[in-house]
Amino acid sequence: MVQFEVPAIVPADPEANVTDLLAQRVQKTPDLALFSVPEGSGWRDISAKDFETAVIALAKGFVAAGIQPGEKVGFLASTTYEWTLIDFALFYAGAVMVPIYETSSPSQIQWIMEDSGATALIVESPDHFARVDEVRGDLPLLREVWQLALGAIDSFTAQGASVEDAEIERRRNLARGEDIATLIYTSGSMGRPKGCVLTHSNFVELSRNSAKALDAVVSMPGASTLLFITTAHVFARFISILAVHSGVRTGHQPDTKNLLPALGSFKPTFLLAVPRVFEKVYNSAEQKAEAGGKGKIFRAAAAVAVEHSRLKEEGQKIPFGTKLKFALFDKLVYSKLREAMGGNVAYAVSGSAPLGARLGHFFHSLGVVILEGYGLTETTAPATVNLADKSKIGTVGPALPGVGVRLGEDDEIEVRGINVFKEYWNNPTATAESFNDDGWFRTGDIGSFDSEGFLTITGRKKEIIVTAGGKNVAPAALEDPIRGNPIISQVVVVGDQKPFIAALVTLDPEMLPTWLANNGLDAKMSLEEASRNAAVRDEVQRAVDRANKSVSRAESIRKFTILPSEWTEDSGHLTPKMSIKRNIILKDFAGKISEIYDEPVHTTTTPLG
Image (tube, rainbow, N blue to C red; front, side):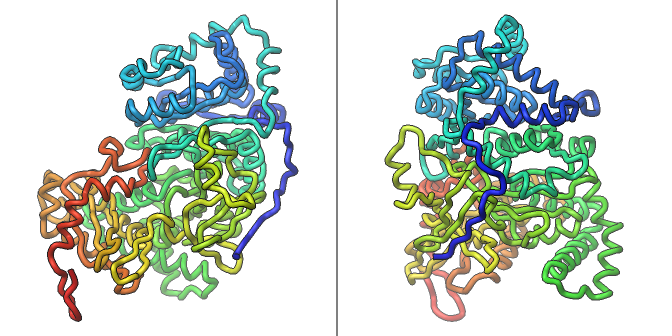
């Protein structure tokens, strides 16, 4: 059995809880700008001390409102400064937050509130309130719903003015490391969401050890980050707590349509993103160059960037001609992209799905080191991550300090350590099924290690396709590169017990009009019209052909269907973090899949089908 385990750098403190991270930060650097909030065309800083003061005032309001220690409070809101303010205020009041994705449907809200036993709920907007109101009659335990848009924070602060400081200090010290800190529900890509019990030690020990491992990122002069992925997800939630511990100035931009202007004014030193964001940045830049008649220059610059980074990583000598081209394109192309991201971004932490070597090398040549990592809700986000001084593009890095990773049966990735959750809430059966007898958590993902312990993810164990010919195929190896095409939104590879591999493809409604215009086609073409268009089909075919080059013929995609509609969270086909719900897609589009195999595919050898 292949196994890599890294000892913790920081001694464990079983008495510590998340509130200690803020209290200690205030003791060290009370005047350090810990947050920045939008103000006019710029940003207003909030010091560590001022943040703590606001947290305590809000915690007093929760106490005055009747929130008891250990009580669960649901929270449904977008990614803003107020999200982290409420997070820490609930910690200080001794309560347990149950975050809910802001895009959740009434039935999803009902399930999470009901299963968790939450007795109160904080929502951001009238729309959120309306969704809750639809199911409130089915939630007998829910006694209060507060709305931020109606001034809930100010009301809490005023209401709690008479609560003594000593009561907040008492409450914030009630929880020990082993106690529940939060209850985060999985995205539900494999069925009904399960509540993951994450402890205070999960966050405290992982933050303290990650800060050491990622010291170059979180301790660089003026370290700052702009959060735009949802803080309801464990990935951004962990980073926001790590930022408080490390003294990283944090801003928020919930509307990704305003992301570029926000990056330009905030000027972060590192970003947190999912691969789809990096794909969008690249594809948007490419199509913008194409529209300006500079598409050929951009593609040449991208090719040089990838080659330059690859040679550099492999320790090979970079030819003089490549150096010249790189210097030229740095002035013409790369510098403009750096400026678009604020000009100061040195690192980007990427998770949730594989990024792909091409994009990793491209951004590396821009001066942005993408630290791809791997983890789940059950591992409090990261289990492995590439380090600033030790990274390998195409991998998700080595195990973090305090974490062990090994490959079990069928190369399934198993994890143990300071980051692994305690249990699934009210679900002992699922808990027992997820842990081996020796206490290692079974992730359901499959992977491989290199000799230095760098992990590469190869797919999901439950998603492996076995063709009629007995060939095992990992869908991700084909889907990820195809999704990198600018006009493609999502891909699902099919072919289980079928004679060949095929795919369902959806188009990207944001990028499609620009691509159509750049190719002399009607930019107002609907998704349905585009799905039947010969030029669009040829472009998708090119993406499929590129993906097929990385696999054997038996694993290659022989046919594909372009669907005339999107897969979205509202349609029930994507999770809140934009992962595909494969089982639901296979069920809902069973007819389309059958049509693919109704007609035989003729090849240069034997007819299939």
